Image 1 (cartoon, helix red, strand yellow):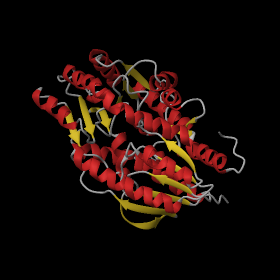
Image 2 (tube, rainbow, N blue to C red; image 1 turned 135 degrees about the horizontal axis):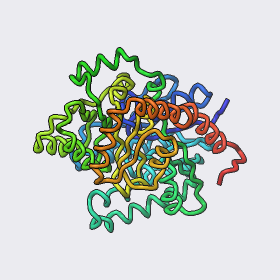
Image 3 (cartoon, rainbow, N blue to C red; image 1 turned 180 degrees about the vertical axis):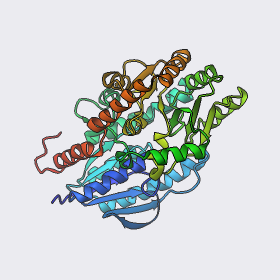
Length: 402
């Protein structure tokens, strides 16, 4: 049985259902069953044991509706995390730092290394490079020092993990040749491994008032890195097709702008539905006949469109809107489980959706290919084996890793 502790640090954890919280909860619980002593340092109040995981809540909760409040609560969280890791970490342990909040690497790497622990940076989003791409290039000089500090933390740890091959070159370039960069894809939520029943899907379609429609779904976070103009223009082109409904399920910073476009253009074929709890995700995703996955050009090397794994898990075609040549369009093309479109190609998207609506056999073939792709690449058990091997390598007395 492994003796070294695995200490994960992330702002959110169970019962929070943010994407990073779900990933961490799945992994922490499973590592316990494999004999690892697992600790999670997260926001909130009090400490507890959840499914064998020791959870340390160190504050930093509260409203995050403004940048000032977010900064204040993140600072409280980072101070609490520093104190807790100083007490928890021991020689031989592995401290796994996620990227929420973005300055975790800077705040904790040196402390964990000083305690004799190994540090693994589990990178979901690459900050601060993301900020200038959506805030404007003028802000880049103000964030350059943060990038330098982040790179120093990566070099000090010498171990980074990313969920996408597109992100790997960016991390390697920023951290240098001495840093080992591993790719382990994010998995679909484990609840999606068992498909929803047709009865449950029909019931939800009826409740949402979209029975009998061809449903084009976008499910998840409407974030600043996501592209919605092509989706909305395609909906405009298809507004006179009464059989087609665009279902947007979720929330996020771009939701208000998308709603405003729909209102100003009187698009009755676009409907909005609230974010669904994880227990209902299998059913809500299966409501879609086809799912849209979007990413603004330039972000593919900085973030990973992880919602794709969920779409594949429920066996639905994935239509990707984003730059050519990345890992996501290559996967979709190789697996024949969807189509890819450049941002701005609303006509191409609208035409492909109309064709898919009429071609039941094509939908079925793409859906079957999607589920097969999930089984081979995005099942949790596949990722767990790779994580277990990596942690054994990191904790070995004579580690073969740098």
